[in-house]
Length: 231
Image 1 (cartoon, helix red, strand yellow):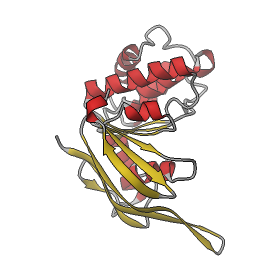
Image 2: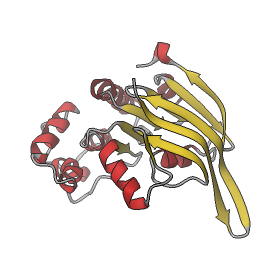
Image 3: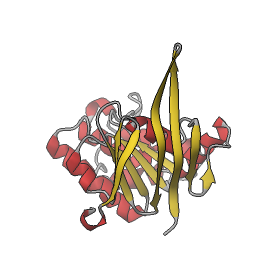
């Protein structure tokens, strides 16, 4: 298997007036194609900051990030955006669908921005895979939370990403719906061979991944292999 994400010595400090707040301290880990990894820890431990840095949404003060063997730290913002467009998918807690577009159109947006031909056909197939073949013309306001997250998952897989980043993907869902979304996410991850990195407060969800990173106060307290119980 090839290494899809490699994080080495990652540190991040934010300035607040005259004060400095170091939110991440010397974080290192890697994940292979087809593997899954959970980032867990209390609120304020740096989980979302780490996710953003690993995905190339922000730059660290120290350390290096490689996605699919591309070093991000030396790239311009435009070049990092290009790497994200070509190699990365995102799923957020609040779905982030465009309210004025149908489910089909929401999935088609990144495909059309890339200039992909056959965007509608690809989007319809993805929505079928997530169980929404009969809901493609519905708008977000006409869909349940679980259905909106399914649309978001279909959109995340639209560029055939090498790695998927998910920030509390079941955080706004009830337990039963969240379980269905988890099953779908891991099923697609296996099927597509996509690396999966997720931030979660849900211990049971974290236990389903191959690796778990525990953060506290911006420091990595431990990293464990959970392949024997991975979904």
